[in-house]
Image (cartoon, rainbow, N blue to C red; front, side):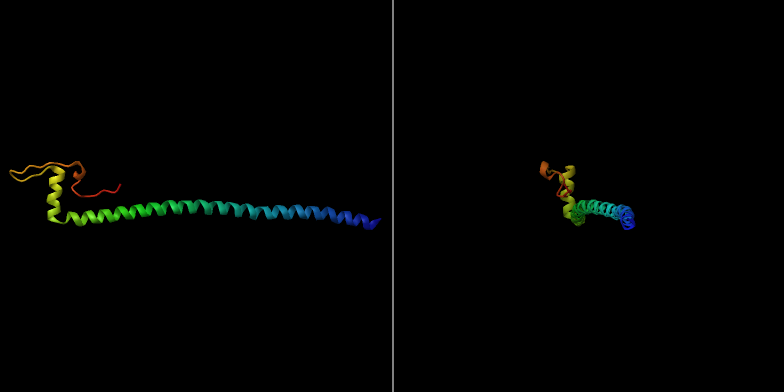
Length: 108
């Protein structure tokens, strides 16, 4: 009779140990899931900011091109005529809406 009681006693502790192990394994699993979610959110942010960086690089190229254009005296004269309807004596200026910026391109 005593060996049966010892087995039942061991099984009771075995169940308690099993529940404890399951609880202990749940903690790292929860941490792993949170880390994965954080990683996914950072990946989406990276994609978003890579696109924004590409747009800013394109705007920078356009601005540099405008700077080189505005350093040319002939271009400045054409720009003044198109933008401000500046004209020499006895000269008529006909503004064209497509060229109202005088050739200086803005990023769109």
